[in-house]
Image 1 (cartoon, one colour):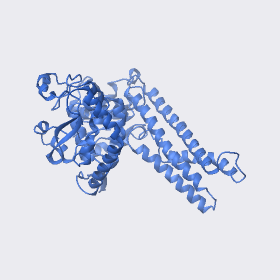
Image 2: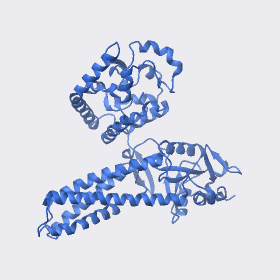
Image 3: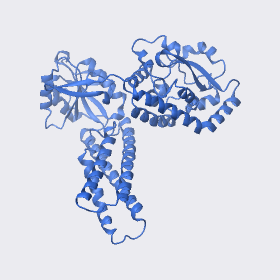
Image 4: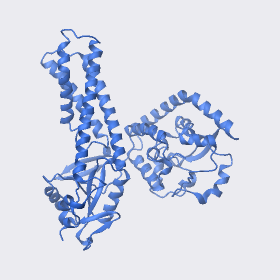
Amino acid sequence: MNSATLLTPSRLTVGGVSPPRARAVVRSYLRALVVLDTAVLSLAVLVGYLAHFGIGPPGGAALPYVVVAPGLVLAWLVSLKAFRCYDDRVIGYGADEYRRVSVASLRLAGGVVIAGWVLDVGVPRGLLTTSFIVGVIGLEVARFAARKRLHRFRSRGRGWSRKVLVVGDTAHVLELVDTLRREPYAGYQVVGACIPDALLAPVPQQLGDVPVVGSFRGIPAAATAIGADTVAVTASGELTATRLRRLGWQLENTGLDLVVAPALTDVAGPRIHTRPVAGLPLIHVEAPEFRGIRKLVKGLVDRASALLALTLLLPLLVVIALTVLADSRGPVLFRQTRVGRGGQEFGVWKFRTMVVNADALLAELAARNETDGLLFKLRDDPRVTRVGRLLRKWSLDELPQLVNVLLGQMSLVGPRPPLPSEVARYDGDVARRLLVKPGMTGLWQISGRSDLSWEDGVRLDLYYVENWSLAADLTILWKTFGAVLNRRGAY
């Protein structure tokens, strides 16, 4: 049977959006992005002009710059286009979009300076410096705002997402589908799957809720039939290197993108390097870094930031302490034993948010646990005080942990600090969380906190342990503010 006959494109819509409509959404978003960039760049050049020449009618010498300003904006847009800042494969997810915008702007700035020197044209430094600083910052902020809007549309199934046909063995297909659906804002929507011939039944079948639309013999036809624009290949014993190469040839000039999902997962880009050996692209994976100069710098940054934060937040800490004291009987601070790096126990500090006999009441509430794994979470926990509920909602109860960071027991960013009772039940994989200091915030905090399952929380913590970096820490800290304001999973 030809795999393309399993689904007919005439009856197919994906997520309520037909393929032509989806392509129109892509074009509309890219046009809006060009308009947004043009407005930002025009404003940046105007600010640079006003900063250098001031307000008022320009003199004779200034007139050429008024004429040249639109040319600078146009050249900037051309530079963004040349560095593929409008490539739909990088827009909307990851740091590559921001990196390309910065590189395109800096290359243009360097080109303008060199051209001015070669042509002996006096280019005001103040105008260029101000324009490019304002322009780069403005472009990055505008891209961030546009991305957030795009993510909201994607999460609601209303925006631009790539329609993906997943190809591979059943187990690997299901795993990749689960991974892509975990972050719908990334823009990959699975619309079908192709599995090996031996597994294909005589009639159409499902893998979960994903329709099986064909076998490995008709991948391009199956992708066209279901309106996919991307073919994602995952692991399969039948997909040899030769067969994968031929698939790439078959997809040429079809408008279909080919992506390969390696069996290697949860490894960040900076740790991966491709090295061609005898025509074979070997993926070299660097070992995680648990010591060295970067760890030393991270510790210094943590302690300096904690000291600064404690100094600035001292008035707020005093107000919270007085509020806790007035709300219910008991101490202001709550000290609980947690496990840190290397299995060393320490006392973590928090503002008290529960009644004084909370631990004694835990046994009575154990049957009402609303989470899986080793944690106890109860959305309407009767042990939480009135003020405690407010503090938890805004994560203010965790501010005293800045003292733990200052003492070197915790980090600003890291895995969730576990209880000794949890650690006693860790298996070999989960115990890797103890290779780094626990953090006040982390991937678990910005991804849903208490709403996460135990498995997802462990996965995020292990990903951080394996792939931490100072740049990632800054990103997590930035996203923590949004997570706190959103209050998702805070109870």
